[in-house]
Amino acid sequence: MISNCWRFLGAHCRRQGAARGTWLPRPRYHLRRSRRGAAPGRAAIQHERERERHMRTSSRPMAGGPGGGAAICDPDVDPLFRPIEIGRLKLKNRIVMAPMTRQRASLAGGVTEIMVDYYRQRTSAGLIVSEGLYPCPRGCGYLFSPGLHDDGQQAGWRDITDAVHSDGGAIFAQIMHVGRLSDPLILSGATPLAPSAVQPDPTARHYTINSPRPKRPYPRPQAMTHADILATVDAFADSATRARAAGFDGVEIHAGSGYLPMQFLSSNTNLRADEWGGSVERRTAFLLACVDAMAGATYPGFVAVKISPGWTFHDIFDTDPVATYSHLARELSKRGMAYLQIGDYGVGWDVYATLRPLFDGPIIQVSGYSRRSAAAAIACEGADMIAFGRAFISNPDLPQRLRYGWPTSRADPATFYTQGSEGYTDYPVHALSDPAGFEVLDPPADPIGKRQA
Ligand SMILES: Cc1cc2nc3c(=O)[nH]c(=O)nc-3n(C[C@H](O)[C@H](O)[C@H](O)COP(=O)(O)O)c2cc1C
Image 1 (cartoon, helix red, strand yellow):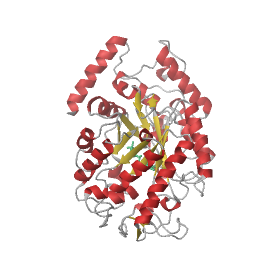
Image 2 (cartoon, helix red, strand yellow):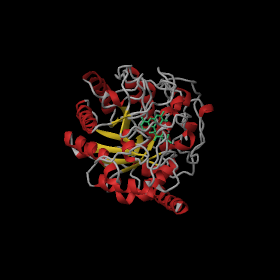
Image 3 (spheres, helix red, strand yellow):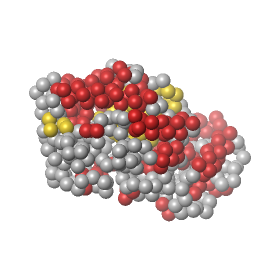
Image 4 (cartoon, helix red, strand yellow):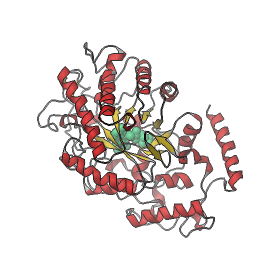
């Protein structure tokens, strides 16, 4: 399958190259002298954009290009740069910035100035999916993460959506309710809510990651009443209304990584015997109710879902994930959603091949992609778009680097969840990057789950 894919891509590229006379085997990397740690200010980003425009429209070299000569678009990655329509949007490329919690918001869950800069720096993505935003106070699991349930939070996001749109980008809000993965210290003394009172394994060490949260096991959650469930569905719908009012192009429900919707989906966390638990149909009911309520509050093409089938991160298990997610994909397929984002975090079965035929709409695949494997997934595997997480943290100009085969810079996990601009808005664009921090081009897949499990 893979070798067929490469044969296809090779032929495709030679055809494209012959037509345009632009095919080159591989760009050579000679870099301008770098300024270590220089932040990608607006001027630098503007320069990089002008350089990209110039390369697209002119055969003459532009000062500052790699090797001092003309950088040529690499046709191997053409599939990533075909425009695509999702919902009511037309996206300029198929590169998605994956949702990533970065904990740079205020303690009240409000947007800060550096968050505006961070998103503005990354608008060359075809689509940005925001970090997870909690739809109600009980859904918060991390200090300094943003919410979307009050007027102040909503107004703050308007600055970000305006910045993204004015640079030609598009942005969805990820709505994330952590369910049992919280702590009374974060919830003003309240106990976390979950489908059933099942405590995450106290020996699991996920809560010890370098993140500002209590360094103690998650407590036993409180099982949600029927009224709690309906109120939470309403909160998801309200967050969609607020997202639209704040200028977002859509909302994505975070139904992966062991958070609340996945707690309903999974057999070890959902022990309910009522209409919200038991059979596959009932375990999927909460997520589908949220999708329907959010679509009702806005419109179906405004809503998307992210899932991580079979992933056991945060001590979550399903006795038959293939059956659960096949049913879910079929149900979601009926709803005219903007897209379904699927993470395959190395779970031992072919998640994409299983679910692709069951969902009739755009699919975003995520986790461990390089430029070549991403292009191949679109050309050969039925993916419509590819999301990049860690690479977008350290490469604000990631699409340009993928397009021209410029090397990417390594992200530093030590600053993933710290506050302030370090490791957040100070990663430079390519022309200003330190080659010592460059990664191997096209490394083998490295699903994030393998590291965190
Ligand atoms: C710092 C960090 C924070 C993340 N936060 C979220 C999140 O809030 N919501 C989510 O759906 N995924 C989150 N993820 C997972 C990413 O969206 C993505 O699926 C994962 O990084 C795999 O993609 P990659 O291999 O390109 O990094 C996070 C990942 C990282 C590295």
